[in-house]
Amino acid sequence: MQQTTGPMKTASSSWLLLIGLITSSLWPALGHADGVFAFTAEQATHVRALAASCAACHGTLGNAVVKEGNGPPSEENNPVLAGRSREDLLSKLLGFRDGSRKATIMHQHSKGLSLEEIALLATHFSQQKPINQPRLQPQALKAEHG
Amino acid sequence: MADPLNRRTFIKAVGATGLLLASRPSLAMASKPPLGRVVIVGGGYAGATAAKYLRLWSMGSIEVIVVEANSQFVSCPMSNLVLGGSKTIHDLTFAYDALKANHGIVFRHDTVTAIDAAAKKISLLGGTLSYDRLIVAPGVDFNYQDWPMLASAEAQKQVPHAWKAGWQTVNLRRQLEAMPDGGVFVMNVPKAPYRCPPGPYERACQVASYFKQHKAKSKVIVLDANAEIISKKGLFAKVFNETYAGMIDYRPDNAITNVNLASKTVSTEFDTVKADVLNFIPPQRAGKIAQVAGLTEKDYPWCDVNFLTYESKLVPNVHVLGDSVAAGLPKSAHMATNQAKVCASAIVQILSGHLPDAAPVFANTCYSFINDNAAMHVANVYRYDAGKKMMVSAEGGGVSVSPNEKEGGYAQAWANNIWADTLS
Image 1: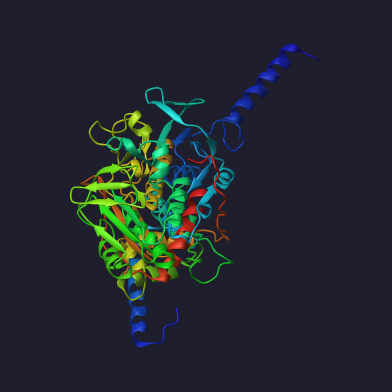
Image 2: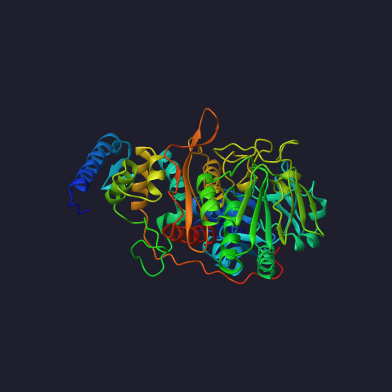
């Protein structure tokens, strides 16, 4: 993230501080081998259903429907979360949570999550493979439908 | 040397090896998946989502059969926009083909008539099916007990509910199109709980949006059985009073007490109103099969479940999902898919000999469109409360500052994503 203005710089360093705090206090709870963060069985079960609840806006396993390619967020391109870096996801979620990052909806969701859940979600989505998820094509309603 | 005994021994040995191989899932695709079979009654948001995630999280080790009467999926979310005129019903209709093909899910287009929980078997019009776990996700049943004059298909042609998306939605739109300018559209809001808490208020806005563009002298009268707007209250009140001032006449605490079908006149305790187009949203209860199968108590029409697994508190090995659940939470599509995911995760854990998540958490976002383009949301995280043994609202939830077109785009993206997540 490139931050140049004063307040944003403050926000940025507050994220770094929070990331530091989480890294020291929570990361040990996540197994860490060969540069890959692994979940405990309980964490894996907890995060899979929680992360799946994000799918209504961000797609199955973080692969949001994209109009054409993996473009920037727009009305038909909700952000794809799959395969983004853990640090990027973490800093955005923490920014939404502490109010330093403007949001329409995510400030409300992120405040309902624990720091551990935010860490689990960032790790989970960073580990998913990004794909080009097309829109599902609708079809004509048949006469016999109730 | 052809020794028959040796040959027999050899064949026997090969046979035994074959059996051993067949019991290993990776080598024997045709055999019964090792973790068992889940039958799902209902292919709506909850049922279709549970089917997909059971297959995903069991890595194909659970056989999934969905029993659904309809061969197509029609989305209730966005269906009010058909009334407003910015969508058609065909924009909201999907096949089950992608879901079936991508995840190896079997569909039976049939209707369930009975559940034999002791034998773990269900009866269909066309046969029976046995299960290891059963999921019942039938949506809501309309309760016309106090409204016999509106119960028939013929009566509903004149006064549609349009509260399950389909041809009734199209019919209601056609009636609005045929109504002369200066006409009156009357709709009710049933006593909560009912499917989609903000839905009736969104509907009032959609019809008003259509009138404002094409029939500016017409009126929308909303007769609410509840004491106040029960979802996104401040936002809807502002839209009624400002965007649709003089057009939407909202009357709280005004339950319909009588309907005259021939004259399309409805009475409440306080008023008698004549409609040109009448939309009656009936009181609701858990889907029919949930009542038949003993999943509801006698005097309470919704299903009590364990919120860690969504297993019925009344019938073992039977899980209930979606609008039929007595959750005390909004009966919405997003909530139905969330419940389905918690349930699918729990069933995979149970059938593989592990414990389900002891503290499920999920997020819910719900949008309402106030015209063709602008929408507003309510967003909330829900968390299991071990003391109350239910899902409760977590900190931080909230609503939009005001309806806007940016959120209209997000709402369309929400629909595109939940459709792809549920059906492919």
